[in-house]
Length: 463
Ligand code: URP
Ligand code: ZN
Ligand code: ZN
Ligand code: ZN
Image 1 (tube, rainbow, N blue to C red):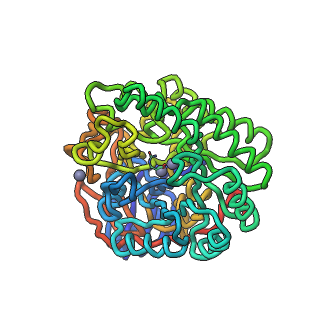
Image 2 (image 1 turned 60 degrees about the vertical axis):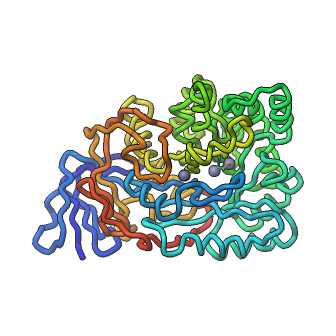
């Protein structure tokens, strides 16, 4: 089976060139000067004239069917990966969530069972550690052997996912020993819980209180503390969903000092603000995620961080809860609003607006959305680049396309969009997942079970 993608501008993390891409079965066979391959020996021709041809997006932070606050995030692996494909994301890395008192390996089995046979595109797992003990630490080695090479820990959510500094230190020692990566949710949860209790005692219960009780200083503090613990233990550190200028400053300082600290941000922190959380009535509940949306001035810092590489990756933290029947759980008590926002479908498009606005270059767009996540999480060069031998995960993107985001037309299994009415320049035209056309001509051609589990190597910046 041969597909020729003809006449497009092929993008990579290092630039752009007019070229044809030849796909043979599941892999890229060649990238060559336009017209070099004849069309006779080809089964399918995709005309990419006037369009970009780029490696499929890698969303390194999603939560499909994740248990949280007595409910589950609304996208299953099936619906969530289908929406990802629609938006030009052909790999997700989701989180298996250890419950206190259970083992990492049984957790991993559970998540394999959830995703196996359901995914439209390829997927991997990170492991969330919420119970640090001798068994868990030993099991980190087995996870790595099973292709799960990164471990998320929480400085937030006391009593649920929270780990003490001592527990974090122990896991970091294990990460140093094994070459694996610690991912950190860096917010000072102990202090936040006090602010939340005080707000509720004072009768302040609206969604905006979610933001006001999680001030950016407490993200900055936790980020600095995580960096210090990583320095003491020699562990590589990846800060997830960085939202605040204070946290970015801590990351930049550590990187300038030569420490192996990396960070991601998310589209919601680049495009939305605490003004959205403050929308009247209960509307703000749509925007409750942690860390919370910040004052608008943080956005300029985050774009700068993306340019300077103090922020290396943009992931979505896709964790959708329906407004009607799930966010509702927190009416009258903001602390009970399930934390998370939808976004897996629109990351590539929203970041393309950064190109249109001159915030980032085309090459940087590809780098932060595909190439760096592949390297960071041990998938390169199978993913993250269009080169001979790479998986044929390919997006043909029309830079002149126009679209308006709406819950009426999106493909995520959630009843609202955080970006409702956003008018975008650029649109996904055609998507291939391992050589198979899954989106073309405004139609979906994928299927559940096409996506395969990705056993990942260690971080390729360090190993
Ligand atoms: O509010 C969020 N971000 N929900 C998902 C879980 C997490 O902390 O990433
Ligand atoms: Zn988190
Ligand atoms: Zn998350
Ligand atoms: Zn629902």
